[in-house]
Each structure stands twice: as structure tokens, then as C-alpha cells.
Image (tube, rainbow, N blue to C red; front, side, top):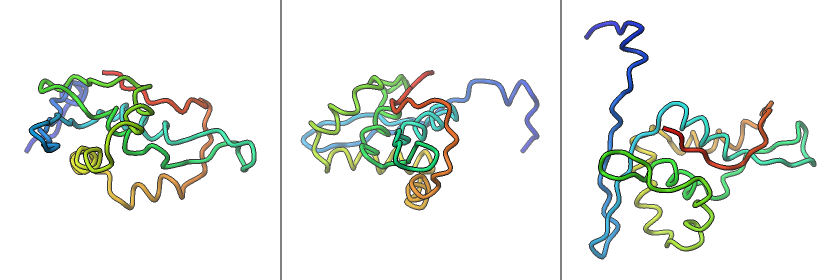
Length: 138
């Protein structure tokens, strides 16, 4: 192994893409998130609440659908869903199918159950951006 230099650290990394079988012959691809995408995903779990100290709280509402938006891709790793699609996806897809995708997304993005709990527990937000939408920039 070698120490990475500046150029190597800043080079676009090839993200892992995994095929996920959803049953009935259907499948999707799920990919790793970049650091920016992970940060924006976590920010999407923050919502404004004027009744709590700081004015914001963290919530796992639509966690699965928001994570799907940030990770479901084509075979080449290009995201296929738009940030606002999470609400429709959450309402229209069965929990079983959504869970199959999310299990893989959590695994390849190193999101543990403990991470999910900490997203809600750590309510020291200090958030300047009050957006609760998911952004999936490449």
C-alpha cells in the first residue's frame, strides 16, 4: 500500500455498484455515495421545528426512500431518481422491496443501525440551511 498524494486524493473515485434483486424478475442497481452525497443525505433528515431548542430536529421519516434516492443508479453508477422522488417512492413501493434496496445501500455506504440512531439522537444541529430535500449531485 502507498500513501496517497494530493492528486490521488482529489481524483474521482470509482464507486461500488451492486445489483439488487427485488423479486418477480425485477432488479435495480445501488451504489456508494460520495462524501458530499452522504452529508446531503444526512442533512435531508433534518427538519425545522420551532418548538425545539435550536429550531431544528432530526427525523428518520422517509429514511429508506431518501436513501434510495441517493443510491439507486443505473449499471454505470448514474443516479436514476430525483431528490423530490422520495415522497412518491415511499408511498408507492412496498416496504419489502424498499428494504431490499436499503439493506444493500446501508451495507456499501457503511450506515449501521447505530448510525441511524445517532442521526436522531445527536440533535445539536447548528444548521444554516433549513432545506429538508435530498440532493444527489455528482
